[in-house]
Length: 412
Length: 126
Image (cartoon, rainbow over all chains, first blue to last red; front, side):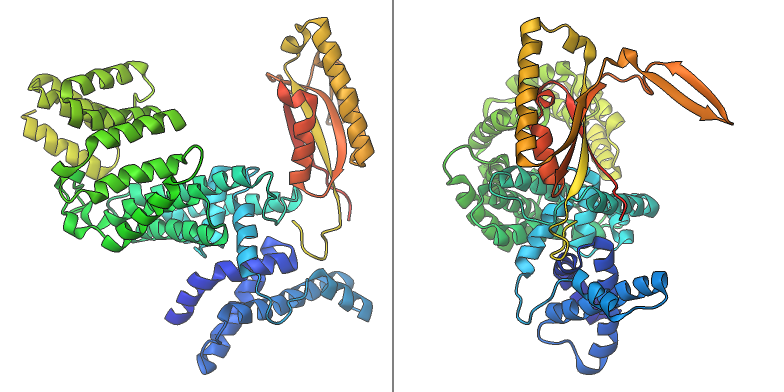
């Protein structure tokens, strides 16, 4: 594929596929037909350049290619096709009237089908990246550090379940849409976190994951406007992503929030994120947990220097979050925020209580935070022990290097 | 999978009702009576809506017998095929337009509140 066509593929494949699935009623046939259409485009656009509406052209051609494929299948089983059989094949494929502009509706159908709760979360994420975002099976496998065969199998099984169990190709009705949107957001956030958690290695594809997640949330927000949970998640991802240029040194070492060059933060993303947070928080009823997390990220984004951070408000927001969606990780972050307000002694008590609960036994940020509090209290030996415990459970190389540097700094 | 051309076709789903027999059996008589009444009302409602194809309650799993034929030899053993925490206690065969409609019916089965309903599409010859 030429570079231009490659870009068109990444941009339009999701929309084209979404509409083709509705017209032909089958994921696999729609995918084959779309590949046929892109192959035809490679030939024709080489000479004439792409048409004004590439997506509409591709759907039109793809639809005819699907009919050709169905016809060849009928021929293979019947040796000869009479007029009636020709007409029957045509009827299997819905018409595509000129000027039909249901791309948005079809995209929603595709998103909700990919994220149907009857599919496992791994399958949902692989499907949405493969179909809506146009990532190849190889790219999905690379992004999740999984074997190509594992991902390919997962996709085949998911599509077979969609077909055999007849998961509807529909946007859920009002009685179900709230729950289903939550499911879609969980899948999008998982995509984002896969991209954001990586800080070294062949990163490019993982930055792509962050961009894809943001693109998906934007798309969902455009198609279902005025939903605080979608605005909240989009804001959260934009605000986190704004810090990406400052989060790692050129050598791939982690740079902590307090040491980051805030001049490198992406002001465009911050501006968009802050506007969305305001909108997401100004709704009646319980705020979405995503909006609360975004509000915390917004307080960091608003602080020109680390020592101007409004820790009191951040600690308060973590308390709200702990009530909306209780989790030991939220308690950990609340304790760290409180240490900036009430000092390390009180925070250490909270952390020790958290460690006693045992839920975060393998989560290295807990001993790392204990090491920090102990060091601030001048309890050097205990701090060294805690730092060693953190190092023992940290898995990513950059995290291990960061902890090793801190251990050396403590003299351990 | 629905396309505009095939949207009217319906599917059949087998709704398998699982529950923990020991827990179920330990319930007071009045509870069981109420549950049976709920089942009666539910069955009537899906007969009225046209979704009902078949449905039955099964005897305890301890009455199950498993049959296998290997190399032409039939073996008959006591007990269900697999020992699990919840046992198959009944089923409905229903007609629905898609999985969402089938799971909505399954969620209304009285046993869904204390056990689990497995929803399996039926493969029909086509």
